[in-house]
Amino acid sequence: MHNARVMDRWKLSVVGLLLVGGVFLAPAGWTATVCVISIREEITHNTLFLVRRALREADSKGAAALVLDMDTNGGRVDATEDIVRLLEHAPMKTYTFVNKKAFSAGAYIAAATDQIFMAPASVIGDAKPILMIPGAGVQETPASYEEKLSSAMRALIRTTAQVKGHNPDVFEAMVDEDKELIIDGVTINPKGKLLTLTTDEAAREYGTPPKPLLSAGTVKSLEELLDKVGLSGAERLTVAPFGFEVLGRWITMLSPLLILVGLVAIYLELKMPGLGVPTVVAVICFGVYFLGFVVAGLAGWEEVALFVVGLTLVAVELLFPGHLVSGVAGVCLIIAALMLAMIERFPGGPPLPVWPEWQIPVLKVLGGFVGSVVVMLILGRYLPKTTLFHKMELATATSAADGYTTASGEAKSLLGTTGVAETNLRPSGKGRFGGQLVDVVTEGDLIEKGVSIKITQVQGARVVVERVTT
Image 1 (cartoon, rainbow, N blue to C red):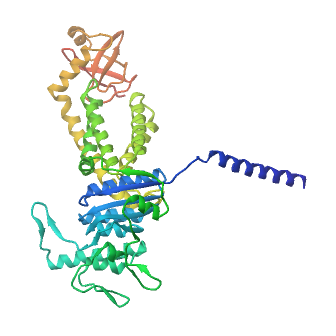
Image 2: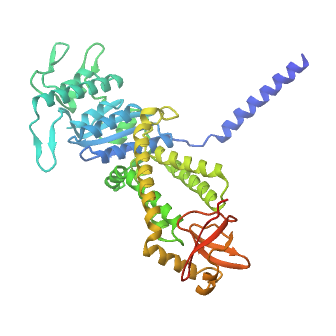
Image 3: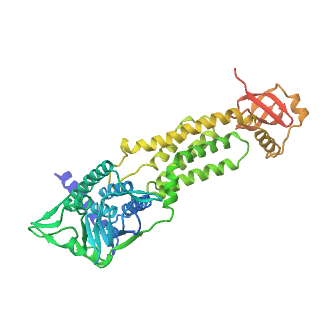
């Protein structure tokens, strides 16, 4: 009994400490955060990158809501579909403020938010897909293709509206002119026309109990909207375009090429004497790679840190050969970082990516790696025979840190001599033959420090060695 009482007192003490600690640790004057995205242009992949980045920032800051301040004539179907999918998975409340117009793609995106508010004299609707060719403008859509596209978009907007609690018939009438919309015996939209609603029409109430047709309210400003949803005084986080979204799109498209060039540059740095241009090229390639995916809203600093750790482990393996575990772990981390940077993660979604999310990143990274291996094999065969390679070897040998250079006659006298690699040969370094220290170079192979080597060629100041095999 005594032990039970002691245990109960201990539990009460712990609970009390936690409660007191919670009081002192709670930030004074805490206010909610609202993320605001201004959409004032055609819906493109740039808009997709902007929304994706905004959701990532809003989720990281624990935002209570996300507001789309919208004034758009529409845009691309593929980008719209991706934006709708992102908003459906948003972990916070989402609102659309139709601040003049939300046509076509804008109406689809609005349907993916929890509530829609409209400014006075605004309009929303006319969401039928059209065929537009760059440089040629709007084109007549073939009947079969039009029906296929319209059918898919009708299904998308109905499903999205149902998930978010909107009337799906209202949005379907915006897509299909054959959709007749009648509520409470009142014809809202006759057959043969696409539905477009003004502020007053969208806010008009129907049914029992009365419910607005589409708009949750008419507001004159974002401040009034936030007041209506109980977020007045909230701290506002405005996510504006970087101006790099177009560049980010091209970078993500060219990601396999960046991987290929970056890996080949690292290979050249290891094979060619000295440090220089290849290192700079590799840093630029992988820096641009991660910058593109950060701008696209796919990657964060976590992937960059993972990549740097992987490179560090690989460097440890190269500088101190024999630590196979560090080399393998480093390569795995590098591959994981490159793939994770491409994966589109939904805030509030599963903690780990599922296989469909891995497929495209795996193909792109694998393509970059395979391409780099092919280039490396070609360079490994022909690079040591080039004049440029020989000149770089000579320059490295004559600028050695200890200033030692073997004279041509002395080197020739050592032809066929066996010695030991005094340093790692990648491919240049130093070898000790008896009591002499000689600047040497391999035919491109990596030879670790301490390995037995033999001088096979002497061409002026160029002393070529190979590994002694037993």
